[in-house]
Image 1 (cartoon, one colour):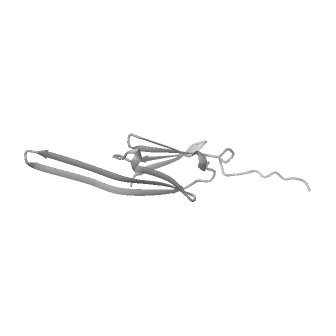
Image 2 (spheres, rainbow, N blue to C red; image 1 turned 120 degrees about the vertical axis):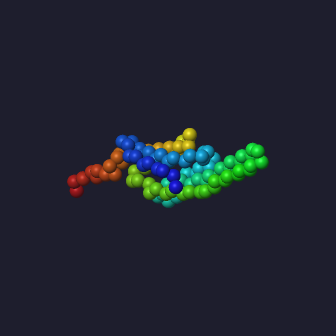
Image 3 (tube, rainbow, N blue to C red; image 1 turned 180 degrees about the vertical axis):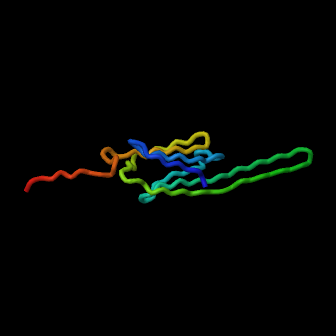
Length: 109
């Protein structure tokens, strides 16, 4: 299971996931209903041959992490970047949704 940090900033939520040994082609990010889903699969093979000694090690595995989308996230502007084994997601907040509150104007009858 990858190590994940979720941080709330003034204008966005940021999710950082450590995914060592993976490439961006091995990682999938989806919106499913009101959840953000991160999926991945690791396929690593190491072969060594010397002096009649043979060694072959394989490491395979898949993972999936789901996060409920916080109120006020602009679903159309979510951004994902991957580099050096780290996935960085930015979930921008919609303008005026910083605290999830909305003021309703009161009108005279």
